[in-house]
Image (cartoon, rainbow, N blue to C red):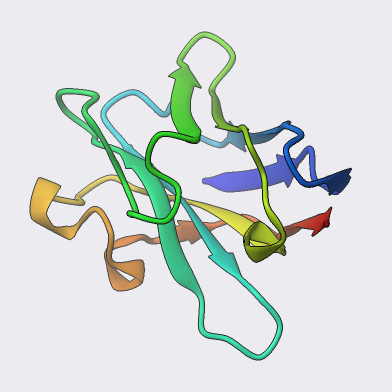
Length: 125
C-alpha cells in the first residue's frame, strides 16, 4: 500500500484545514487508518484513527471535538478535518494504514505497516 498525504498549509489560529491521504495498491476496506503528527523536537504522537471493521473512530484528548477522521472507500481516501486550529497543532502530519490493527492498538504507531510522507501544518497565533 502506498499512501500519499496532502492538504497541509499555513493558517491562523481558529481556522480549519482538511488533510487527505490517498491510498494505492490495495483497497482501504477492512484496513485501519490513522493520523499521527510530529512537532519539531518532539516524538510522533497519535491524533485519530478509524478501525478496520466497525469504522469506529478514536481521537487523542488534545484534538477530540475539533478534528474528525473519515474515509471514502470509493475514492480510497482518508480525511482529517481539523477545525479550531491552534499553534499547538503545528506539526508534520502522517497518515498510516494497517490491515491487522485491533481496536485496542489503534493509537499505537507500531501497529501500522504502511505510512505516507508527512504534510506540514503550521498554525500562527
